[in-house]
Image 1: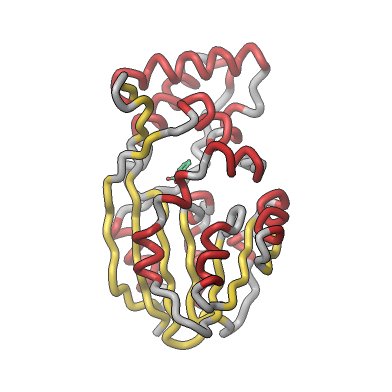
Image 2 (image 1 turned 45 degrees about the vertical axis):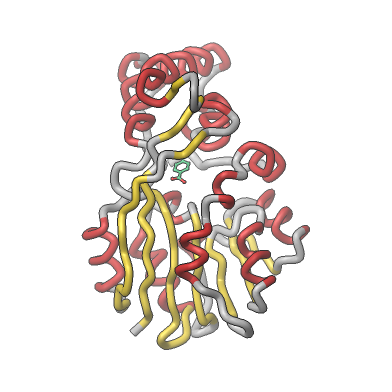
Length: 249
Ligand code: BEZ
């Protein structure tokens, strides 16, 4: 699997919608004064800093060195750790995650690490891409690879589970699922489609030559424009969120 690269400054400039649309999952977390919270995939630390401002002690982890540096600059304790490789034991009242779990392709390993990290009765509260998330974009990208055999094989870097699938993974791992839902959330791409592809799909197009990249960007735009673009609203992607709260038994 080719890895995704993140630039915290680019992310802050063009992907602010990710944290600004997190109010529902933050409400579901309902952080309480004095709690110790792990922010799994903390990105540039914006949400972790908010949780900390509610009187919690927060540790953020992220696989990207650039994101960890940005989170530390916000005053968060942040560690460069891939969510598959967590090694915390009975330490947290809550594990929180926003828009990160869909990048982790071995969910059993992640959920097991979360369970071990939590104290007994601790909660796992998260939002991630769910079944059908960015389906228009994913099928367009896949088709463009099929139409251009010189690009090689398409590798989907994302995991977008259904309610049933994720609930069953949580239950098998020893969680009681209190809340779980799939929510359609059309999302304006404030920087436009090219910026979105540039930031979020770079593991897909980074191996391509400059000429192939131009073909890729143009062909994806042609395929999705009628579904995702309007003069009134600009680019709006077909995001679907899976949001849940589960308790460690
Ligand atoms: C998401 O937040 O759902 C997402 C963002 C970028 C790529 C894939 C999914």
